[in-house]
Image (cartoon, rainbow, N blue to C red):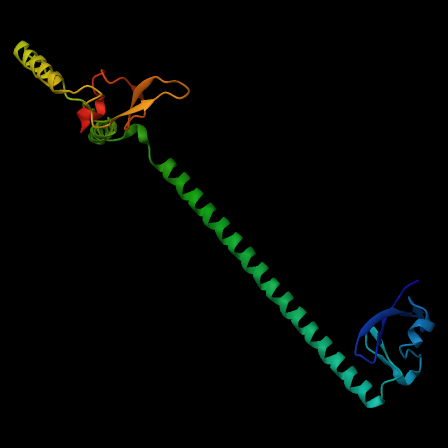
Length: 225
């Protein structure tokens, strides 16, 4: 069966429903007439309005002047939609034409460039170049190699060897310092503690948190301060 036109039913609330097709002057509904008749559906010719591709059946609850006004609005809306579709299609055609023109132009430009490069290669014989130019090329290559060679810097300066007298002075200074270093019991960071679960007395350094005996020399924290 070939359906020529789509049938729409316009209710009293101005809702448009697709209800069937019109082919060979016969209406084929997708819903039963009993269900639609409750909404005011009737095949009365006075309620039927046709266009080129559609049929609009208005509810029998609507007066004729309202039907005419609504149908005019429907026609205007369809014209707007068709105009917008045509404009969009025209814009797409213009865009496609511009893309095609751009591709052709780029292709012609690439062909011209390829021809020009091939012509230069044919007309210029590199094997017969001027010897002066060869010397110049060698100089440029040597300069490039020099620029690419990284400069090597010594990160650490060479260590100076200490004399015996300097070593002796360092040893003397260390011995003098050791006499001034107090024992842990005399250190300002040492405090008396007792080991847990025992009666044994010990000491603890407030800086390092280590347990130390009072007779031990003060830790490195004393020297830092």
